[in-house]
Amino acid sequence: MFSFNPDRSQYPATGPDGKLEVDLETGKFLKLWHGPNHPGITGNMSLEIIVNGDEVVEARTRVGYLHRGFEKLMERRTFIQVFPIVCRVCVPEPDFNEYCYAAAVEELAGIEVPEAANWIRTLILEMGRFNSYMMAMGGIGGALGMGVPGQWMTYVRDLMLDRFEELTGARIYHMFILPGGVRGHLPEGFGERMEETLQTAEKYIADLDRLMFTNAVFKKRTQGIGVIDPALFEPYGVTGPNARAGGVAKDVRKDAPYLVYDQLTFDVAVEQESDIYARARVRFRDLHATIDLIRQILRDMPKDGPVMTSLPNVLHWKIPRGETYIKGEASRGEYGYYLVTDGSGYPRRINVRGPSYTHAMALLEHLIPGTNIADIAALMVSLHTYPPEIER
Amino acid sequence: MRDLIERLTQRYSLGAPTFQRPVLTFVDLTVNEQLRAILLELRDREGFTHLTLLTAVDWLEEGRFQLTYMLNNRTANQTLALRVYLDRAVAVGETIHDIWPTAETYQRELREMFGIDFPGSPRVDDEFMLEGWTDLPPYRRDFDTLAYSQQTYRDRPGRATTDPRAHMKQKLYPQG
Image 1: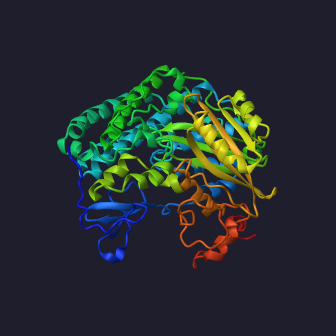
Image 2: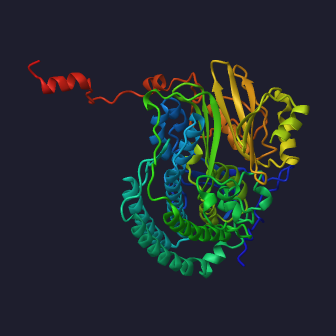
């Protein structure tokens, strides 16, 4: 197994607290910026790293390149005006924002959602998860210099975007799940076209398995590297596939079922090693579960019935004072919306809890010291972070 | 959950709980000094090991900030949100980064966005997402986004704006 043994002979002595005293003036350390525009960075985020030789001794996550002040914007908009904004919080998987926001508003306003709408919501969330995993698979390949998986997965994701387009009218920001239900039923023949897409996807995914997961170079560069000790999961708020790769079967879909997940059959993929390879593998296995879930939903969902309840006049819609928290299992971990209302026509406070908030900040800064500079990109992509949800 | 709240009420000053859903409870902690003790007890004895989020709500009219510490017990599938209130004029909270290291990030954000200080929290004064910000913390309710943008940015020259009603009237009925 590959192991990184840095040459520490040139190090200055450590300080009284046992930590390295990094003094850039000595010339033994070099400060580098990894990002915000770097092929190994997911989105606009940068890592300020200090290296000694090729060993990273300190890392700081710097965010703010994408800050658009969404939470503040939402406070100045009516409940229905907020709905087209929320999806923009997370670009690659926007549907969780729509679902969490809609469910939070429905709960505080006491709105019942029709059964068929819940099935369509679940379908959309799983389609979004599929897309997000496609980007994760391509990303981890790209971070290690394998360009082909990225091209394949982008192609397959594009096919799924076609399905999104015919269902919702939009490819990236769908704005289909809104308070009260969803905007419509599935179009005619959607199931058959989805099946075609899934079969194409499965072909590429099988190829990906042979190309990436059995590849000796990929294994050498990912196994035993970037290990998160399972003891760190709770202190650092690790959720989703990152926790499942370390043997903890955290999955909100199972732990606290929402929508129609209690009527669906699926297994939670768990690996034990908690390294980069295990995290990629968990996502790969979960991708199969997602494909299976999409098929189950299309088979079992009600084919007719209302998908939208009538809302009060949305221009004068006031919601009584209250607060709630709605969460769901996004492809990266627990995604949640904390909504506080004060009886007026505007939300008092909306807080978005994105999984990257904990993964890319405190956890990543904790994991990086001691790694090789060449492994940072893979380590970061393996945590599957999306910066927009850190800074909103 | 009701049992837990009853047990806690015997030793801590809790307000009336809100059972929002069977799995989600909100409760006020009325004595701020008890925060650390109750969080440690919830984490170590009651299984609330996951800090879901820590955020603030600005109740400008009441002159106070609400800090929400949302904790989750995965085994029991229960979420408990503790609400702590801070005087808006003082705005100093107690740091919990040693209980959950990830709280460091939340506290940095609260320091920058709401101006709530957490003495002792690592790098709490570092810039988080705003660079060179000198104005009022932007997530406070009294921060006026419109006034800020009008003072900070200027309108681009050359962009003519017209009142749509007058413009259409002129276009459709030029004779008046």
